[in-house]
Image (cartoon, rainbow, N blue to C red; front, side):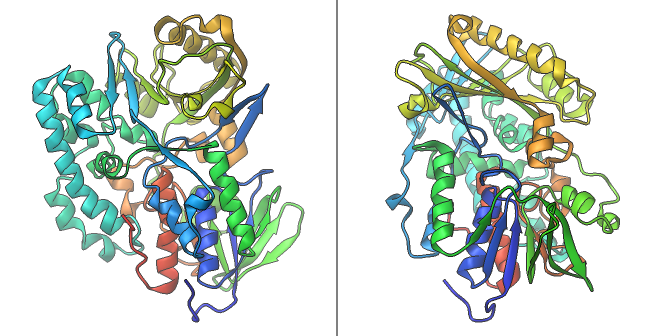
Length: 498
């Protein structure tokens, strides 16, 4: 895939997360000479890999949907993903553990899912089919037509308003789900997806109910070797295509002249010239820290940021074969807890958890007879007044106690090599604004044109990709943001591929 209109201009991509990687590959495919700079020792952004005592842990994203988005990156260069990586479909997609002790498997087939729902409510089995049909309609507009398209002008957004109104996307995810499902636990289970991209389902636009059909259409996958293996193979692909990858390269400033970006300066004072600069992190971080004279570009109305994340990693010296690959452990409160996290930004006595057990699928993540675990707990971001020096240990103990009481018996006696990350680590390691786990929230008033734009309004050759820009957080979103930049550069619609 090449075009003669771009020539051999130089592009610098700041940030080696999935958005930056996808953008570097797409820029290379249309003819740019590309340099990717990453401030950490390894590329991958949040998808770092930790090793402790023989246990491996994917530090960031663990759920792969829309696998064709990664297949497309290899196909840009006439390669096949399957020659390098193995994506394994999961069933169940997620296992839910409710506070009353009941369990619900969200299965890979519709029939199996309906059977599971029927154990809670026969009416909700029919309601789920209605929800799925509505999700498909939103997917056909929101994902197939809008995700990969630029929204740098109000006009581009207004064209889509009639279709979105018709699909009732002015509602929240919770309102949409509740209009089809009545059982309180089913309502919780099928409202959970916004939390996986940083949103409160009671405030996230119903556009995000498209995730239901996205998962149903393509499935939920695990990459053998983890997302760390996926990053490694994408790095190898970049190397084969001559992309210059510089790690431990912290950008101090984007150099501008006459309303154009001319390069970047590293903290070492080294400069890299560029005809095009793409920033693959929080846009507000860029404006505040890398463009010190561009504070006027900040929005008049402050953006609302996603929750923070407390991530607990550990191994166990025994097996837990009854635990699914992906588990959602829900506490006794749902709406009230989310309000405390997102609005009051205060710590609660209870919590809800996402539990990742990669050893359910890939035994290489732990020594023989052992398990590797990763627990993600939504918490307030750094706009809340929380002392993580103290709360980090307290939350660790509370999580271990509750998991031992419910689904991981004897955990306190077999747990080992425990460590954790807090929102402070997200701010320090990833330059995440307010230590938020997913940049800005996916509210209606922070979607499409209302999100950070993929191209700066004044610096014509400065672009943005990643969770804070259109289309949003999550692997499908950040990888698709590279398509948006490609279309802005070439004027040719890339297509959703889905």
